[in-house]
Length: 79
Picture 1 (cartoon, rainbow, N blue to C red):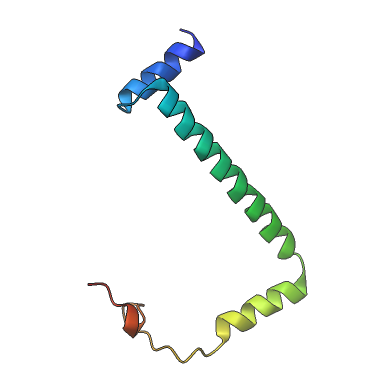
Picture 2 (tube, rainbow, N blue to C red; picture 1 turned 45 degrees about the vertical axis):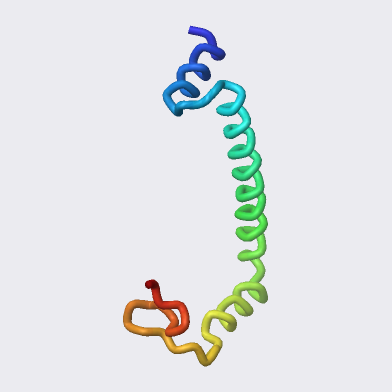
């Protein structure tokens, strides 16, 4: 089986043309690259104690927003 045949089968299983399937896969790969770069940058930043200290300050900051027991802020309750 060729690569093209395998991809065509995947596209057919997804109910779309090979061109559309390849376009979707290319967009997904682009997104994954962006997320991977973000994760790498964040992990690098986490090596800096000053960065981590600031993150903790933000996490502990009192925003004045009250959260219910379910973790949702009062103004953003699910309907």
